[in-house]
Each structure stands twice: as C-alpha cells, then as structure tokens.
Length: 102
Image (cartoon, rainbow, N blue to C red; front, side):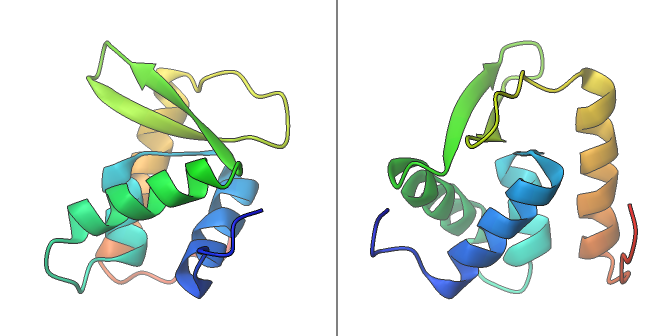
C-alpha cells in the first residue's frame, strides 16, 4: 500500500474495517473535531486512504454526499438506516461519549 498513510489514517482504516462505512462529516467528528478546517482535513485523509486502495467511494445522490466503503470485503452501499446509525455514533464521539459497544 501507500507509504503516505499516517498513524491517524491507520485509526480511520481500523474504524472503517469495523463499521464498513463512513462519510466525511462522520470522520470529521470522530477524528478531527479539535482541529481548524477539520472537514477539509478529513476529506483529504479519506482521499489518501482511497488512493492507497483501502476504501472505495459510493455517491449517495439522495443525501448528496460520498460514502466511503471498506474495500476488503464485497460490501454494498449502506441503507439509509445504517447511515443514520453511523451519524448517531459520530455525534456521540463528537459530544465526548466513550463508546465501548455499538
């Protein structure tokens, strides 16, 4: 894979391996909430992870956003229900909750 993958990228990859899907706002809330320009940082890091071959991108036209999908398994795009659950998980992280089981 690519040598430009950072330690934070490895954390994002582990998250995607576990939950299979993520959007830029979700990754922003979970991994970059303390940083200025966090949305752009999350977008660039997901782009680097995609370029390294770890994830693929699905365009959700109904919600007008990209969904980043773990690339190692044959995974279909998530249902709207799954997307809402992952939005909730990201919001819990953003609010400072420690999520042990989801």
